[in-house]
Image (cartoon, rainbow, N blue to C red; front, side, top):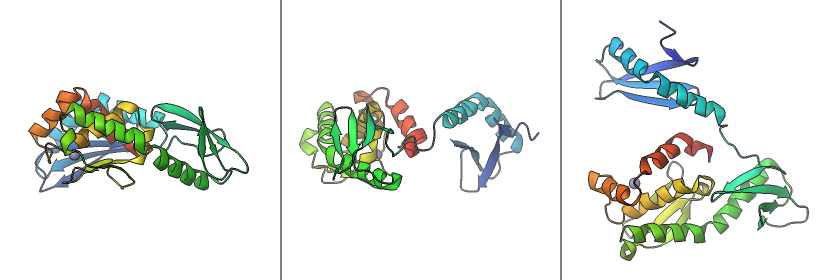
Amino acid sequence: MTDTWAISGVPVQIRRSPRRRTVGLQVRPGEITLYAPARVPLVTLREIVDARRDWIAHHLEQYAARPMSPWIFEDGGTLLYLGETLNLKMVPDLRFARREGGDLLIPPGSSADTARRVERWTRRVCLPPYQQLVLGAAARLNATAKLGRVQISGAQYRWGSCNAQGDIRLHWKLSRAPLDVLDYVAVHEAAHLLEFNHSRRYWALVEQVLPGYRRQRDWLKEYGHTL
Ligand SMILES: [Zn+2]
């Protein structure tokens, strides 16, 4: 029995809640959680887990293959920036981080210092490409007239936002995601210029412009924490 309730050595935790109406499954690194309504019998929950065994195992494997934060902020480390891999190079007597071809030159420092410098550099350089992306997304949606300003955000737990004035903000860390994921967030926010909600009509708009958007959305859910 215990064997059934562990997948790839990770135990399945059941969280019941009287307010829940459906069963939900969440897989995170080293963690499988099954959210269930109060009255669903255990045998049904087992069936649900068994039916998704391969899917769960696959996700756990992917987590194992991908470190929590793939960035090594030291000399010789690498950084993804808008789909390009940059090499981090410590250069003495340098005052600010600066890009030179495929290298990102940074003043020497601890890995925390370097992480901060890389963040500052990223925030400084990613605005123009973000603006272009959002403009492109708004144009594909025929929503250019409603677009306000494009800004960089560092918000926790949000990759992007769109306010009533049509200002769109995208997280600076998205510059480390695959380009199509960044594009998805740009389209996601630009679609809010037309539909200020997540209704069916809203998702239909997103799908019109980006038919495969679910793949990018799932990527963010699974790997967003590694950015
Ligand atoms: Zn949204």
